[in-house]
Length: 290
Ligand SMILES: C[S@@+](CC[C@H](N)C(=O)[O-])C[C@H]1O[C@@H](n2cnc3c(N)ncnc32)[C@H](O)[C@@H]1O
Image (cartoon, rainbow, N blue to C red; front, side):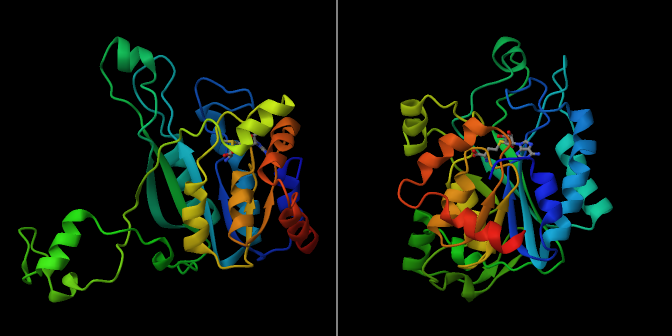
């Protein structure tokens, strides 16, 4: 859906959304084409979204924000804006921090060059914080839907057996540790390269001459949270939709969804993500909620 998502969120029914999964424009020092604001202005710009998102979420609902950090202009030190955003959303609007996640993108470039590759005084910034916030302390969630294969070490331990004992840290590890549950509970560090360069979306944009959204997240990131925090038929909203990857994943997982994006070219390109069904999920959800 094209437009400013704020009035759309304000028109939606209260307590109607299961998950807001999004990556808002970051508070970047070097601005991108789609209009990032500086770190200082950031909190003021986000306040009305915080209020509107809180209103539309169900009591069991979650807001998941993928948000990268920023360097202060002219110095090799970091802005606190994404931490301040987290504190603001919790303290001013009543969100709860369900859990903080870190998305490690091993393919990130070593920037800013001045501090990392020229003066060699800082290391590569390869982490985005992903704030999982909830409307109440009890959001709907199940880690059973995002289990991962066991590591080779754990497979060996399960095969050879484990003797219950106290760890040097003092933790008492019982025999239950050695029960094979078929898969492992993942940590809150998500390792995911962001390197796709020849997917259906890119090819469609190139064929039709549409500008590609330059700050896309990989489909696996929203997929993780959509699986963990929603059921089939639930409603997911992405108010900063970009190339509509969140909508594409929701459609594949049979969730209802609404993606809102201001820039027409990004949405024209997003059509390439839905070769057979068009944007049916979006239309259905929109009818039901406005
Ligand atoms: C970081 S990008 C999102 C990228 C998206 N997750 C993807 O993978 O394609 C943020 C997007 O939010 C859009 N945007 C910013 N303010 C908006 C608003 N008020 N309403 C709708 N879209 C907005 C920008 O145009 C930009 O495309």
